[in-house]
Amino acid sequence: MAADCEAGSRDRHALHRRRSPVRRSRRSRRPDRRAGGPAPAWSIQAPTRPAESRQPPTGRILMIANFKPALSNLVPAAAVAAGIALSAGAAQAQTFLKMSSLQAGSPGYTISTAIINIVQKNTDLKIQLSAGETQTRAMLQGARGKLDIMMSTPFAVFWMKKKVAMYKKVKDAPEMAARLRNILSFPLGTIYVVTKADSGIETFKDLKGKRVFMGPPGGGAYNIAKAMIVSSSGLKDGKDFTSARLDWRSGSQAFQDGNVAAYLGAGTVPNPLVEQFALGGNLRFLSMPESAFQHPAAKGLISLPGFVRASIDAAGYKGKVVNKEPVSSIAMWAAITSHTGVAADHIYKITKAVLDNLKDLHATAPWLKSITRDTVLAQMNLPLHAGAYRAYKEAGLKLPAALVPAEAAK
Image (tube, rainbow, N blue to C red):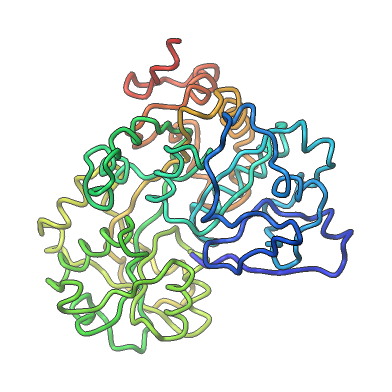
């Protein structure tokens, strides 16, 4: 889950050809407003008009069309560079959608950029990506109309509907959950807790007295980590060890710098971020003992929608991870999600483009080959967006009644 990077170029013509839709994360430097840069991800305002009629706001989307941003605001992303150079006239006629994802290097970021590339190559839609956001917060932003597309997880949907965990103090959480609509499911990967092989930490019990990155405070990852650690060791945050209160980007950097003893993340094997960590020396994954799965915390976690028991094969890291046996852990599913305020035609185009170009999706990363017509609806606990419903129905997919949106009958 590596952080997105910042770069510029001296060649203005090269910028015209390679402008990326990826927006900087919340911790990135503020844009130069005098240079017409975009508003940062954390200051996106709710649209004043529906997405289907929204035109690019002056000074933000026109910045993309005219290519006059501050150089410090440019974030290169090779996976999505194709098909995003726009003329000013074209920008006025096109629909721009705002999308949020996890940090660069994460499975959520990988699939988001792959979808953007496919959509912008095969439709008239343009998508601007904000990377580095926690998905639990992005779900609320989407439900309130501040985002058009975001990532969700079945367990976070469950928590939002029940108004528990990080949504406990959100008065309208159930009403917000009712506005969310799914587009497609994907495996987010297996959860891992990694340490440096020479740290002396070999089991979860060895985390006693240590500083651990468990994901951003109050996010879904933090609650997962808390359950995994207490069920595997009996250790409690704030009493037996300290959680580092950092965002994803700072957390990964803190682990590489040796400022936290362990890092929790999720992903497939090989995971780009774990490979990056391994550049600094060999690593070790902490394995959940069999007894952990009988603990109420772990049992409660696995009982939530979207969670399954899983294992990690360290052999995929070619000797950089010292575990010799499969690492016992938990895996989870996620979804690309929208909300009822986004036009059905837009989501129809996105869904159809992905279905028609699965080979392009699979070519982006090996793990994306697991996304097929048979898995796009897996583990969903939200209705489909009306546009996605239409695309899947036309494609002949069997749609469970629970996934049929109320809007489809209108």
